[in-house]
Amino acid sequence: MSTEVFLVKAFTSNPNDGNLAGVVLDFDRSLSEERMQEIATAVGASETAFVSSPLEGGDLSVRWFTPSNEVGLCIHATISPLAVLHSLEELSSKEQLDVETKNAKLVASLEKSVFWIQVNDYILQAESLPAKEILDRLELSSSDLNGDLGVVEIYDDLELIVPVKKLKTLDSLKPKLGVYKDLCKQA
Image 1 (cartoon, helix red, strand yellow):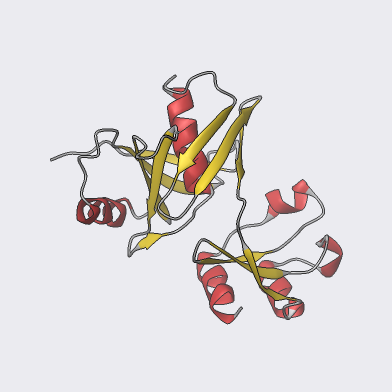
Image 2: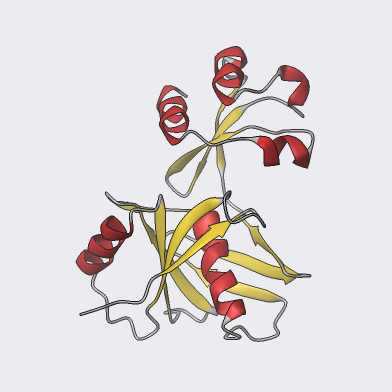
């Protein structure tokens, strides 16, 4: 059985940059959890989003799988299927979308071809992390920051928050997945 997979790079207008996500449209909910995991493993992106019809009255439902497991939240793999649906002209002209996930409901909106995702519930896990080591690994300086580093728990996932002052600084970051994964484990 073949499954169509879209590959999308989020957070960029340059095809050589961005966060890669796989996107599978499964509106009839024909894919089992095991099959979704197999597809995500074969795709090999950090996350693959599986979009289906909602169960509880939202506009659509999204689940995310890494090559090894399902995750509770992935913003770039939420934006990616919205971009696919928008490019296929499958999204209504609605400005706001209710997105069901396994752990929560998100609100997405489209403004001038830019998608925004609203995350309402999170728990601050750690503040004032050892900034020097983290900044060194990310090749940033303290003057690049707009506040303290932190770790938040969002729907069972831990996320490292690095508040930078300028979009230019964010755009210049070159993600090193091994380094990022190591930092998250230490935090």
